[in-house]
Image 1: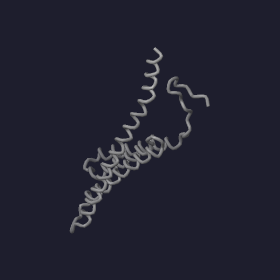
Image 2: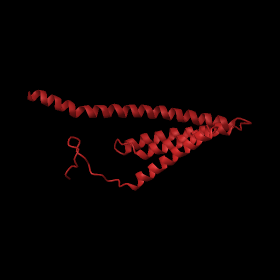
Image 3: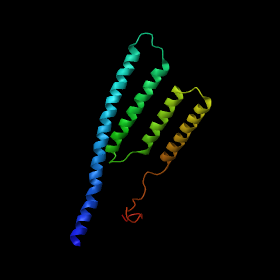
Image 4: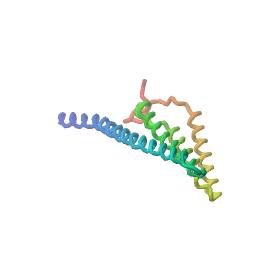
Length: 151
């Protein structure tokens, strides 16, 4: 019985480490894919700039905003590793704001949709403001008891 408990204990301790390793590997692969797509976007962006007579400002702005989306996702992955395997919520908010701005610039044919996108941006900015005014230090909670740990 003790041997079974010991094996179960080892499995329970090692499973999160194995899953964390798998997650880190997948994020590195995703970062490589995003880096390739970012470089491809830069090449496409340069082709638009070098093309004679290209006055398509929508395509130009769309490519710039897509570039920033790739850039923000890559920055978020870097922050994940730098901040000890934690995604800061503010980066998700940045990405949401950038995506909504892209939608407003690219698809501004319907005024009601543009108003809704603007309200979404306002909500995201209010959320960002709330995150910044709340204290960063919170009591560490025990995983098993959901009570603050004695420290």
